[in-house]
Image (cartoon, rainbow over all chains, first blue to last red; front, side, top):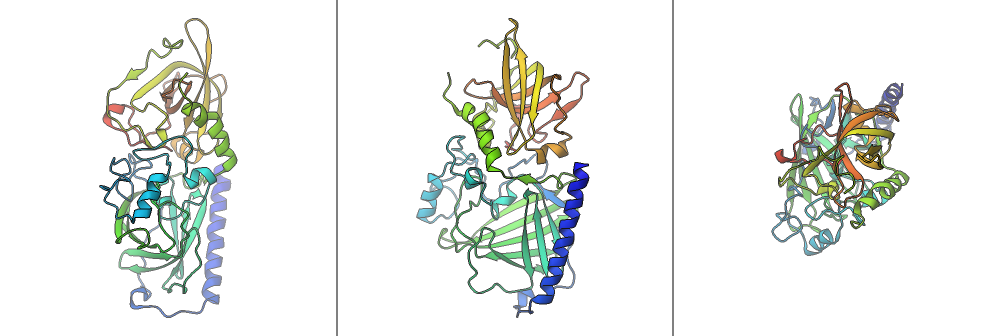
Length: 270
Length: 137
């Protein structure tokens, strides 16, 4: 019965998004588009629920493997600006070579803050695309939350900062390209705490390599936090079940978990 | 340790499997087990479910244990439900114990008397020697 209710809720949500998309199409004046964003008639099929390939768990990190002992050191390949490296090393993540259970500074764990992009792809939950002509919605099991990607539209001029930024997109052959700006600087890029600024310009390129495999390529362009643009990649596998069970972040549940598990596990040995 | 007997099935591996991630508090190099764990309850909640159970040693002393598990959104597609474990069920529980010696851990799987297995982390090698992907969830 629970699954039936959740499935029904998911269908209703998708139907609602369709109505929103239709309304948006009617209300929004077509903006001038550049040559890249000219509407492509053939739309690649990205349908399905996508998540971690079996065996990768919450790993398969977009950026260099945070288990790498070099993470957060000058030998780290990530082109940090000095302040960004200092900030990374001041964090107390649960993950990475110096992961700790105690007194985390992870905004996701400490406050249930939105995880943002691209970190949401590192949380081992699923996501689904809902492709409509003028907006592509990405529904995330984690949250649960969703992002709208306005298709074949330019960005607004200087959008105000938000947790998820402002995303526009277009199809380039078999690839969905998502261009996002207007982030705030409160999220971590990954589980070890790599920072970003409110000037981050993120490009996501989703391509269905085969029926069961989705590839995400990323370009991080954030001159305030990194000395040059840099890239990352993650592979997702088609999932078979589970999307209808949302993961809700709850501070009260986390506090209960902290008191009943984290605190005794991190206490000094008796 | 009072419950050394109950930990007879504990197998110590000397691998260099990574103990970090959200599992920093647990000995991910060692798979522990209790062959006769009596279920008290399962807390079906985020960020992690919790399985509470009692074990009894040779002297008849009862110790309460609590092992964390993935959240409901990840257990459900792995054939778990909040009723998978009922109070009073006697099962074998495999887990990684807390490093500090407290009666806590992170679960790997449950084996029922009829041989049925509920694996909480099928993507995590049951033999730590083969390497760990360390999925916290």
